[in-house]
Length: 89
Image 1: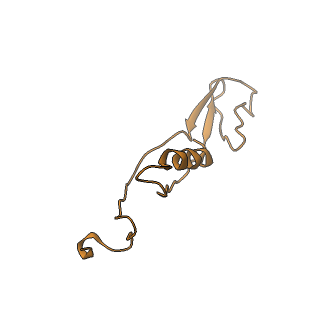
Image 2: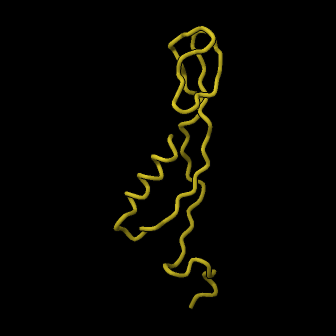
Image 3: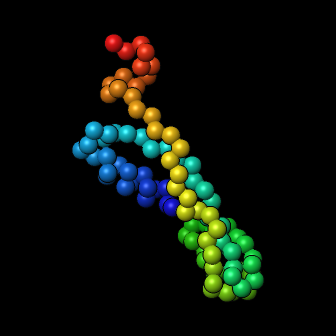
């Protein structure tokens, strides 16, 4: 997953809807790969490096970096996000 691409798409998806202006907070997971031939592992980096540095093999498995998990959603009344629900009224 590319965090900047996700941020851009999130903003587009929210535009003109009830959630326009919503914030998306992400924690990137570093991409790691493993060579199918020699089992060497490495950080993929940006731009992605998917060639094995040890044996130049091309059979590569991406071990991490594609994860996308929604951990929490917070909803606040429009215009008053800093006031707890029990104090509104």
